[in-house]
Length: 273
Image 1 (cartoon, one colour):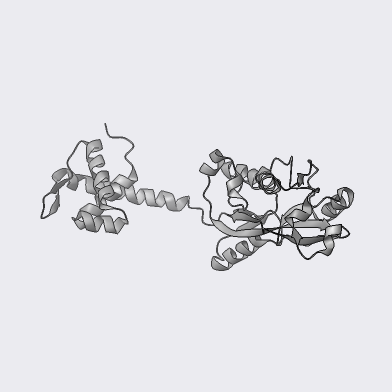
Image 2 (image 1 turned 90 degrees about the vertical axis):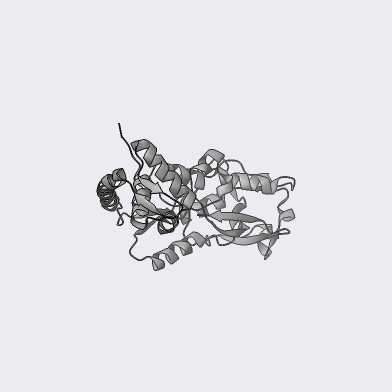
């Protein structure tokens, strides 16, 4: 009994039937000839029928192949109609930018220029780990962050593209002793407790990067603190705790603070989409 024939097998059959040549049919489908031959043989096994007569000089349809061809064409046409009906080209794509004013926003702006017909909706929530869970659940389409910091099982379920290596920086209260410097050597942070999202379940990939960076340099990871959402809350929390905050070089300016690039060496974070 024939059941659940994959449309791919019927496309392979129809291409060979149209070309009567396996090499040309493979080129037509943009696949390797071996893969095409494998699909045709599998279809013949599933149908229990020989579909082509193959010789060194030519390929011809058998009577069973002739009988299958109109059915195959109707199935493929129906499959294409189904795919078109649910392509949902107008569905907005939800893109998590983490924070306004950073490189992810420039990527989004360029994407909108390239494809103005695609509705790309931005949201601003912190943390690739949290965003990855939303992507897996179908609540989000795209996010940005340190892909290598995700759990292996999470990485296996995502596609990613490296965007750039971002130089790291530190946010300091404007009257902090290190704020007078144009750049802050990592060694100058020895003895400091630097905040890097510890305890935030949405950002462990960022905390992991900080832990690796601080190890052996005498820099402590600041304890968990409430996540500041919005400029005013960030200003209030910084004024209260007065701890340096690990950031990237294009982090937007915040009132009452300065942003200084880290040096000696210049640490980098791999930003992926």
